[in-house]
Amino acid sequence: MKKITNKLLWIFAVGQFGWSLLSGIISNWMVYYYTGTPDAQNPNTGIFASYITQNPILFRLTLFGLVLAVGRIFDAITDPLIAGWSDRSNYRGGRRIPFMRAIAIPFALVTIVLFVLPQTGSIAVNDVLLFVLLMLFYLFMTIFCTPYNALIAELGDTQEHRINVSTYISFTFIVGQSLSFMLPNLASMLEGVAGQAGSIRLAVAIMATIACIAMLVPSFYIKERDYIDSKPSQTNAFSSLLKTFRNNQFRHFVYSDVIYFFALTLFQTGLAFYETKLMEIEDTWTFVLTATMTFISVCLYPVVNKLAPRLGKKKLIVTGFFAYAFVFLITSLCGKGLYWGFIIAVCAAIPMAILGILPQACVADVAELSRLETGEDRSGMFFAARTFAFKMGQALAMVVFTSVTVAETAASYRNTAIIATVTCLIGAFLFLLYNEKLILGRIQALKGSEK
Image (tube, rainbow, N blue to C red; front, side, top):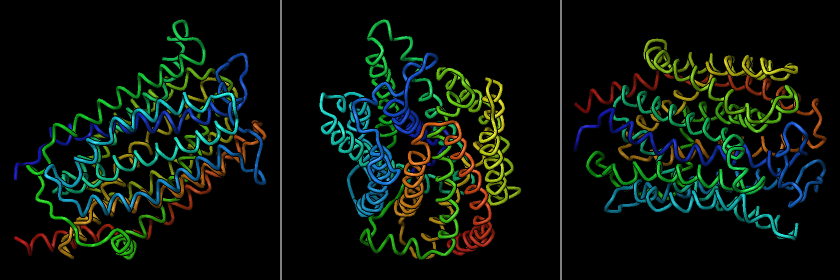
């Protein structure tokens, strides 16, 4: 086997940039462009809203909220199925890379089509198209991301490499997410060429092309068999998923992770609305604020990377939970003015650095311990089980956000930030059940006995 280097881990991390950019386009702008009402300052808000059903169809649940929620649930269900397929596969190119290589282009294409096809003359047809295309988007994201995430544990062959690869992919993830916030800026530049609606579609197409190229880089550069001596798992997907959730420490981790992603999804979905409806600033400032947050967060990466082995990942993650709760609280109280956006951006940079890096390393630790104890490498299923759980939290967040904000009032948007604050605090207390010292001690002991 060839030696795994930090250069290889950086090349691997480029793929994270690609899929996070596509994910950011959908999570940050689909609700914004397909719901809401335009105003003089932000004329593109809800520019495609007239094409789909807007009124609540079940209690306070909107069609768009239900479609997004069902999409996340569908995505969560397919995660363990794809993970089981990947864990059991024995392709010449490896257990993970062939999946990534095959799906990168369809994944990017369906992202573009989501901003084009659901705009026919029939609202009913548009509703169906939106539903089908979002299901395909989440399916393709699962097919790429589940094998990709499994490589985090497999390329992280040491504790140092696990923290390093988690740091690198966290960096490329937030760069991708930050670039997605530039969509209105890019669309504004293209408006003279393609018109108001066409500029948005063209901006999405440009970003999706960049994302596709990024996803193909590790897919073709990394020769999986050269670095990983992987053997196909003999356990079927359902049994493997049950085994994963029977892991006591993994369950403790997942409890808090579900709540964290519920809170974070509420906040991310509402970010454009907090800025335009509460702070009353133009949506083009979203990229500037996100870039500020990202820059500060990246500057903190070396600090988190150094502190994690000394203080422990658990202490830092709990700190990150409390810091995010503080950010959500500030958001719920913010007033008019751009300076509120910068206050939130600066404060959010700290938990973003912590929680962007360390949770993946925790899952990799648990997966590594399971491999050492059982002799079976089910890394794909551990990461799939994590995404299965947190996507349930995301699905619930989509339903809650679209239901709470159906009135489109400032108070309704503040309420979503308050809900995020409370749930994030609950997540912090739940993570205290996770026993990091036990896991790392056991890994060290078993690796010592192997030698």
